[in-house]
Image 1: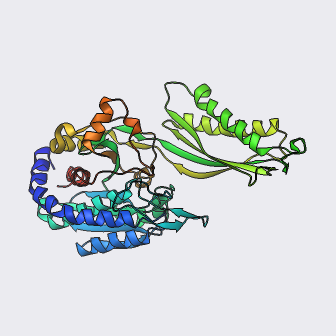
Image 2: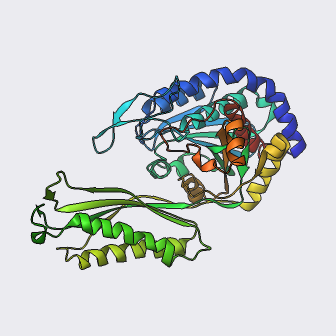
Length: 421
């Protein structure tokens, strides 16, 4: 659609959106209270599949374990794919909301954990369900094919690839454009886009260091893996500060250090879990090489009985928006939102969204929807304390429902309409 047509399209939908919001709020709260861990999203997937079927989509379920793909054909025209991720996090919610999650589940290692949607995927699901219904009910306003994809396992970096491995590229029509969005800290009612890199590549590693256990009173008879792990942790921080150019963006975080069971026992081994974020493949390769070099060197310095065991936990590719497609979406957003849409900075978070575009070899665009109460955000911005607002993955992350729910729905509809005829 042309820009003038997009504005007209949204004006005609405005009353329908307002009427739909109470239903979507109910859906959102239900999914929020019933979160499911990665690759376990059976209930959420069924809710999405049933909803799509109700509005005349051709529905495929169990794609890549729990993935759902809905196809809505509406004459000749472009194929537009809209994607929402469904999984929650192993985090005990501390928002204090009346609809907060109290769920407990077992993770893949059999450990009982609190589960919550503190990354906002419950909103993503509600947005896509709303967009699916509106496009179905207003087929007189557009032409083409809508592909609604509800994806599992984004938080573990396996969901998109599991759908691809399940034959997604061969089983479904090739999109002309793939579109996705994410709620983030930012003024609710705003939309932030960016051409080129918008999300970093992400690599997580598990590193097991081997020592020799002994009694805590006889450290001289041990090879202490706790000291080894502590030294390794500190040394790893020098990769960013001393080996990566200051003009490059990169992050290395050791998020877990586990060793021992009792204060007077020197354990046999210690385990580090670390996360790396980069925007440049050569920088990523250097950091990964440096991690191995430092870990091996610290083990050698400690006279460890063997080299460290390094395994990859998860790997995310960089999300790099197509320039031409982003310009098209940005123009549509400006027509709809005015100065409430703007170009933002890249984020050091990571996503597996781009795997769809990479495997189909088609352009994709990903953007952010603000979810912070406007007064709270603007006050924090004025006082230069935006970083104090609980962000995604914090147990206190709590997007405001209004106007976030409406803005995300409008953004999804607007971006798709930019391609439909």
